[in-house]
Length: 152
Image (cartoon, rainbow, N blue to C red; front, side, top):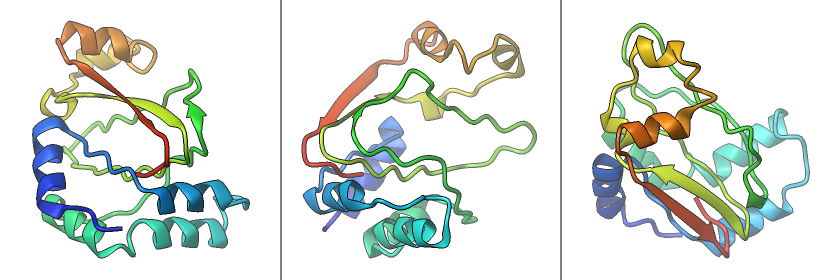
């Protein structure tokens, strides 16, 4: 895998995301058959993401402090309706999500959502249940992707 770091950094800063199709990552996700929230699972996540020098370079370029957190692992197909969003109250914290996708995964990203602050007022409107409505109100276009081979 050879991620074009400069291209990825530019896309992340401009659009808020970068998608990289990679059959090896897709196959690794497909073949992983253990519980993710175990030492073996976390080792798998580290090996397929942070051990990659390009990903490490991207995270170091974008983040002043590095914390690693696991959210979910998606093996394929269309995401369920229970999308998950995280909101931070208090000091602003920059986060970079590295998502591993199996073959034939379909997902969507809202462009430029990283440039629009989420206010306390929006959170009071149960934004986690109505994110699509808020994104439309903020005029944020959505880009849908299908990774036939998988990737990140």
